[in-house]
Image (cartoon, rainbow, N blue to C red):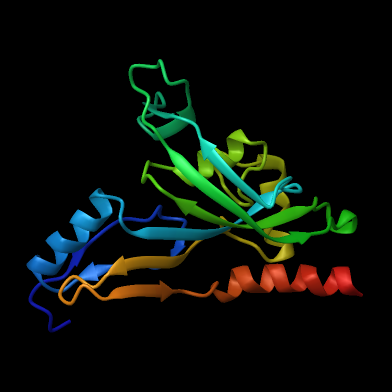
Length: 200
């Protein structure tokens, strides 16, 4: 509260939890924004998706196109490289954990993924994963709406996307930094509960 200058360095979707960087000096803000613009930072998210993710590692290099719905809401879809409004988007996916289905609760198999973005497009992770047939659990824009209706009764009341790791250089010293934010309780509990059920 006593800080004379506080400015957000980057943004997260409203429904996304995790690391958010705030600069306390204008010089730090500019240095950090330059790192984001030059894509020298490393941003890795944890995302729980519907279904069994088929590979240990995957590169998704599919352009994205922004558009507006009739009510003015912003949306994004995948497109082709020859689309004049195409923006290149590059996402790296690594499998972390497979969660088995829970038929009694009406829940399918799910996969917890580490997702690193090399470009910072609007809704990039959400659209790229959905385009592979594995929408993020709880995503009200690009996910499975029928599944989403069942999630609150199972303890998940939000989208399962979390900014987990941020790698950057300290704006003053140049020191390499790795910042980590563990999963918040409501996300960690959802995964842990399912793991326990599958073990029993």
